[in-house]
Image (cartoon, rainbow over all chains, first blue to last red):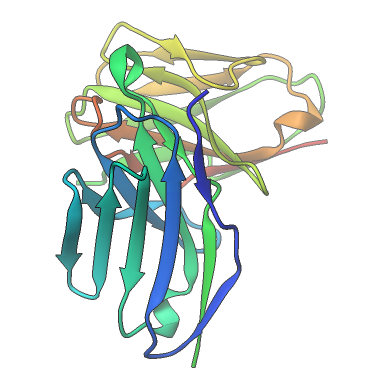
Length: 113
Length: 113
């Protein structure tokens, strides 16, 4: 069973701070990694994906990938109250079953005004 | 372009009743998925369809059946509902499936009494 681990939180940060969300995964063959945001009562929506080691930036969001350590993180700069949500890390299964995404249980982020 | 749509939005069933959850996508995606989301358990894959005409079991298939009616539509059936099936059900789709972004529908909230 492929595993994706996240701290459940809640992670609380003040408005304007950097929020750091972390995810580890067990499948060494995984090639791509996704971060979804889920507001309470809503469906998950993709905010970032990353394929290569290193950093990928998109606006206030930066995804960081370290395949050797099997670790992927999401940094949110200048956090806003509207960023308050649960953040889900998702990793595709490698090999023949890689149609499937394995999701972490999510980290609840609260940004305080 | 509605993306992924699901019906109904909310349903209450009595134990032993049956129902079908409907899902449709208008993005010409090949792969479709059904997940359930429970507090503390994260998103768990019930069934998926890598392409039209194929379906496969996910992590928690017991008590469910699926039909990939055509490329657009993927339904989930509960033949004899149980209280343990009380959950939020999400349908998702992706273009080719392999390690790609999945796009989610708005969800169906199901309560089984």
